[in-house]
Structure formats: structure tokens, C-alpha cells
Amino acid sequence: MSILNRLKKNQKHLTKMAKRHNITAYRLYDRDIPEFPYIVEVFNDYAVISLRLKAIDEEESKKLNYQEFLKALDELGYPNEKRLVKKRIKSGASEQYKKNKEKPIILTVNEGPLKFEVNLNQYLDTGLFLDHRPWRKKFNESDLTGKKYLNLFCYSGSLSVALASAGAIVTSVDLSKNYLEWAKKNFQLNGLDLNKHSFIEDDCLSFLKELEGNSFDGIVIDPPTFSVSKKFKGTFDVDRDHSFLIRQCHKALKSGGVGYFSNNLRSFKMDEQLQERYSIKDISYQSIPIDFHDKKIHQAFSWIKSLP
Image (cartoon, rainbow, N blue to C red; front, side):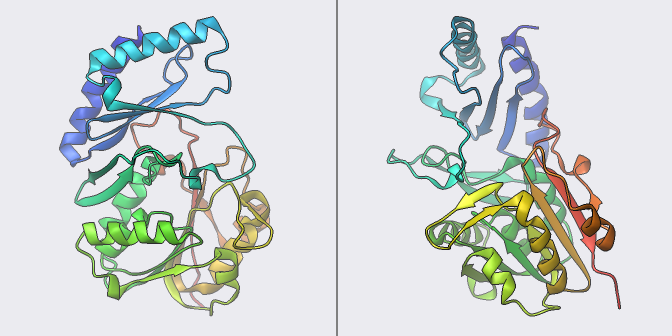
């Protein structure tokens, strides 16, 4: 199958799904064909292309394939002025937090009844992790009226919005003041009263150390793989630090409370003793959206704090 035919097939299938569920942001192409190892995500009428090869233009064959790919996007309705290209290069730091000086392309996208502001070009990530759409749908369709929820590493607050829209009282924690302001914008986009919720600028590890037990009915943890910041000493490493995170969150849950943990490290392995102790379930498979060809985009887990 040619790349153009594959893109057309994906577009036909996914636009039906998107229209049916009022979704205007989704993954159109996910490295389906090995010779075209690119990712394309649609945000309204824009296409954002992610290149995950370090030397995308160093080999002539790759260069020719990439040009063919761009021509196919032209025919699909995403000309040069309606597409952006992002190159992902592995580094030790958390790259999505670095801001460039381009004039921002800011859109509001729909996800069912929810709305989110995305910034297509100023950061490595757009502000909306599309692979967590099933979580947002699950939270939003639940009755969480009056429940107290904590969202750690909240980023732009999309999961917090889903929880709050379901009636939860949400505490969102992030080290970045800019991302907390972004989260507040998303709350306002959805008609949510900021005064009913909390937005805390803090290192999540430090925040948990000071947290009292039995505080929340639910906690959502979606940390970066690795991060370093001038605001706190040391680093965060999800392999090294997830056990501490989950233990502290377990203490902070009320009896019968639910914990959710997710991360994007492909080599991640949950602490087996911790998993057995808290009866933590791997829910990765049911948490991946249908538009993701890559079923290892994240690993997701949940557990319930046993009643005394």
C-alpha cells in the first residue's frame, strides 16, 4: 500500500470516529509503514508531524521518502501552511518544557463535551497528550460529585478538567507556573469555577512529603520519564522514583480511594513488591486510543486502597 493510500484510508476511518464523538484532535498516522516512520496528529485543520529519527535527512532514501510523505499530505488537504514539523531528539532533560520564540499557533480543540487550548509550535508537545483521551473520557463520564481528586504533574490540566467536569474538587500540582496558568485557561474554557479548585506550584515529590494521610478520593499520577529543574535540587527519574510516588499517594488516599499511574518509558517495570502489596492492575491495553498504532505509547496502572 502506498503512503497516500494509507493516509487516505486512515483519514476516512478516523474522521468518521472524530465526527461521531466530536473530536477535533487525533492521531492520523502512527508510523504505520516502516519506510515512513513518522507521526501525524491533527488539530482542527492543522497537521503536526513528528520526526523521531535523529538523522532524518542524512540518508538519501529517507530524504526521498519524507518528500513523498509531504506530497501525500498535500493531497490529503494539509499544505505547507497548514502543517508543522517537530524533531524529537533524545536528551536527559524533559524537552517538552522548553519554549521557543516562534509566534504561537494557539487553537481550541474539542474532545467530546470538553475543550482544550493547544499551542502547536512553541513547545515540543502541544499541551494535550492525545494518548490519554480514554482516561479523560472515563473521568468525564463518571459521577464524581463532591469527590476530592489530586492530579500530580498536571501539565496543562486536561485530566483535571475531565475530573472537575464530572463534579470532582480537584487539586492540580505542577512545578511550572506557566503550565498552571494554562490549566486555569482550560478550566475557564469549560465553564469551571476556578475558586472551587486548587492550583499549586510545587515539586510533586516535596508536595507529597507534606501531605496528610486519607486526603483524597482519587489521585492521578502522570509523571515525565526524567526531569531536572532549577527550582528543586536533584532530578526526577520515573524508574527510580515511582515507588516513592505510589507509596506516598497510597497514604494520601482515603479508604476505597482510587489511584491511577501512567508513564511513557517503554522499558518501565513496576516495582513487583509494590504491585503485589497494593494489588495494582496493569490497565495499559484498555487505555490506548484506537487511533494509536503504537500500543506501547504508555503504560497505565490503577489500584484501590482497601477498606480498613
